[in-house]
Image (cartoon, rainbow, N blue to C red):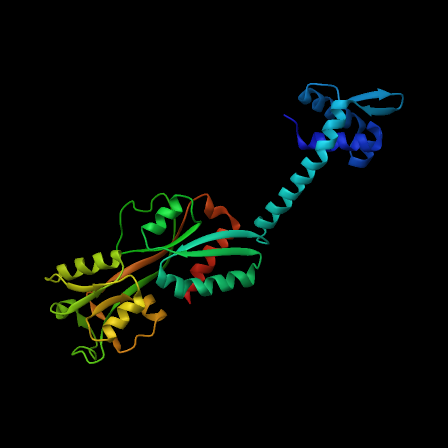
Length: 296
């Protein structure tokens, strides 16, 4: 196999015309140049240089290799510079997938801080709810997935690097004129006879489980993944809902009131990545900024 260091020696010999001059240019000894040229000829399987008096002359094979060497070495130099830029966060790309309420609350501050600190790092963002976002990560279609889960799901993310960000409590949402609008706390059971407006599939499933633990099955008349739509439906007096605090922070509810609910319903917000990706500087920096944004 032809090595880059041997190509550099060959190019120096071709440029200077002798082993001794090449050694001076490269800052090494003449025997070292001679040894590396022998190794290169062995790898190439043919003679590359012919000694004519005090000078060296390239064979046809040597001329061909020198001609290619310039492009090869230039490409290697460019690759080394690009890798150094990425490692030094002067360049790099991160593909982020987030659920909507995370996109509107955690992500903006994190990416703004990342851009200020590392302006050469580019981040793209698409939205997807878990488990779809986690599937995208495992399939190699993103580098970081912002996700959530209710309670510990054994083994669900064992193959991933999990960066816990925060615990997001779900809060009740009722119309302004509702009988419980001014309550300090509302039991889920007190809403058993209400019409319900449910959110994303995972949140919907959690809602049904909590209600059933309280002795009733919620009558879900409306279901939508769009949190502003949920708030609009509640504000219009069409039902009640429970939403994550992150979702309520991102949209000002009109005509609706928030009330704490019991028992507490909490979800864990995390940033996920693959073990190998966690060592990539741009990915590590993005994870750090997400953690800092969650702590604010």
